[in-house]
View (cartoon, rainbow, N blue to C red):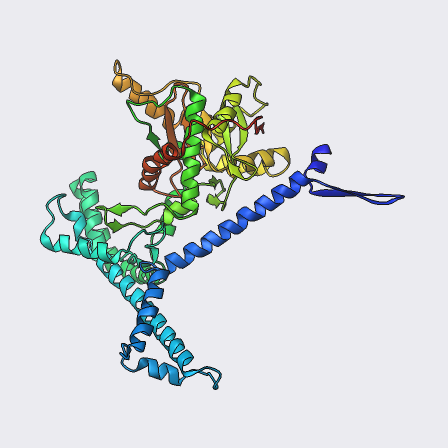
Length: 510
């Protein structure tokens, strides 16, 4: 009950002398900081929405166009070919505005319309340019002059300093291939797998499909492509990944390795603290849409939609199909060590913890010798097996009470971290066996010390090596590769050896 009383901002009691009111200044401070962070995020998203909505132009370009139009009007030059006068004639001023004000207002309206038309033209031109795919089949370094000219045009119309999602409205729709082409490529792909008799039978089936069911299904697919920018992505996610009932541990999830020859530190807690801090900086830049989109050949923008569910996401098991749960924010992570789960807070008084402060929390977890609770040590094995038993167990044992709260903490965390008690990495004396062991540890570990349902699970080994295990349904490997290449330099840019821990631990065992 004491904890419940401390959790509220104020409490009062009725006494014979009146009402006795007690305020909790700390609780009120947290309420204020939470509201301040919320409004800052809302304002930032509103601003980014405007910048993305007008890209590749910018709000400053609108001001330039409007000022230029009004300036030419004062120079007695009509750049609108009479449009400004027509706009002025339709203004509902009723005599309240002077002639000068009407001129400025009509020039403002014409300049705004001209700017919108320019933005639309630039977007459509960029979309048309990006519809060319021939550059993917040209040998690197031997592009003809026509392709070089095309890439130059793409650079010109791509604008400057794009946000993460700036190109989303300029990307072309995924084209629907012809049924005949699909059947031809299908037969080419299965030919090495079939003998002559089986291949002839497959040719007959493919021909029948092309003439009978194919045209009707093709019409449905084209209808969907008119409404969706990518006619296959949602079906692919649903039927290829989320409806798979087998284990995702080795059939779906994949991993990323650390540098082979370089270990910044062999202190496990220090490497964990810096890794967590690097990922949190990357998440903050992603929330602010400051991550530059992936660019093919350094100039061709790629789709950024898969970045949205990188953090604060988890795959929730179901009997027939899983779902992806994504939160807009999460202020904690969950750490696994020697069979125990720890909830680690990431902020103190609204401030992101520094690397050395996170290191302090990791070290306290490593030094903790308390035994696991009954059933706690191998709980994550449920995420490694078939999906239906896991869904049934989740419904039976994690739908209420403390079990539900503990599971919510894991699934709603920013990401998952395992402090592994083994040493992994490349060894010169036995390179093949060491790399094989390293890869197996990242892929599955002990099968109960990684939470395979989390979008991101970081593994920090005893000797300072790190790795990553990623759930596959929410994104493909290039997104993780971008995180791996960009995330850690961010930490080096912000890290300061002058940082000092602020005080006592903020971790709590679940």
